Image: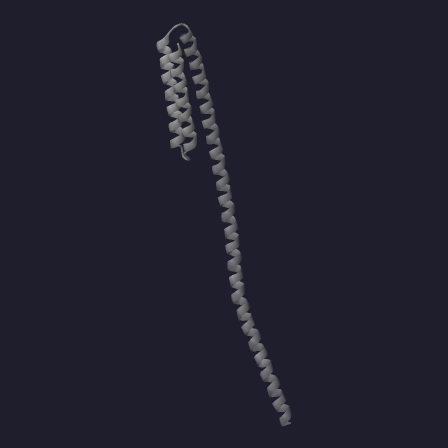
Length: 151
């Protein structure tokens, strides 16, 4: 009989340790489950934040494109007005008004100066393009002087 009690005691201790290990595993599971839920919440938050940033970026790009289109339209209108003014000046020049030709030359020079300055001071400066405008202005001046000297 004593052997039976010893066997039952050993069996009871084994069952006790088995239940203790199950309880410890359950505690670990609860802790990991809480961390998993936190992680899932963070992922959802990150996804919603990314979606918000993407929407905001698209909206800013749309605004930027609209602004660019408006500026392009204004520039085209200004160029058209300049062409019309140039045509009027050329007509008047052909009538024999040399001072008008000089005024037109000054106008063209001012226009080139404006274009160069606009390229240098815009949000993302175009230094190379501004240098090209300056070089074109220099070449035009040189050719005008050459034309005057041949008259």
